[in-house]
Amino acid sequence: MELSFLTTSRTVLLVSDEFLTIFSISSSGAKLIETVPWGADNFEKTISNIIAKDCGKKPVLIVNDMVEQHYRKERVVKTGVSFVDKSSMVARKLNVAFPNYSIRAAYPLKEKIPKTDSQPAADVYIFAAVANTDQITQTVSATKKSLASVAGFCLLPVEASDMVKALSTKMAKKGRKKNTWSIFIGQHRNGSLRQVLTKNGELALTRMSPMTESDDNPEVWAQELYNEFKSTMS
Image (cartoon, rainbow, N blue to C red):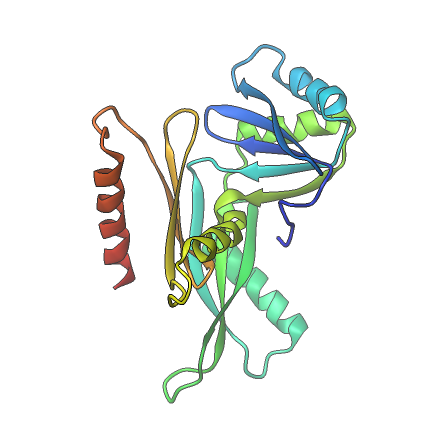
């Protein structure tokens, strides 16, 4: 979805596997309000009160960063297909790709497949799906009880792609050719690492990995991760 994280006056609920983390976004920046474990007593009431009172009932953006997220690249033929027919085609292919997931969406990429003698021209999409878990159900229910509006539901790896591109561009030395591939690694409070790999500024691959006590050398660990990602590029 096209929704900038820089938009002011918003409450962001970050859904992870162990916690729900609440941020209040304003013109002055982002403020961490609370981190609430899923097993907390009166969970929905606690969250709805925080949204209503501490966050002033600002529109709520739900950002999912749980481990169970499913992605796949799909091509959709564009030659001789109208806009309406293409939308129906994407919906059908999405249903076939993820028939057992009620939460699913298609995201168009800038990448295009040119016409050749063996294949027609096609657009490229990322198909994504997540399970409708108890955590998501509780989060939506708490938001409704707060009487705040829902600004949207999105997946963090997809939304983070623009941020990874911006950081990569800013960190690159002047005069240097723009990076085709970029890797971003972020750490959750429980120690898990979210890795986002982008190609030309768009999501190419993502995964969540546990961080163990044996991973005591971040530079070595990051190099091993890079080598693993590099093997998927070839």
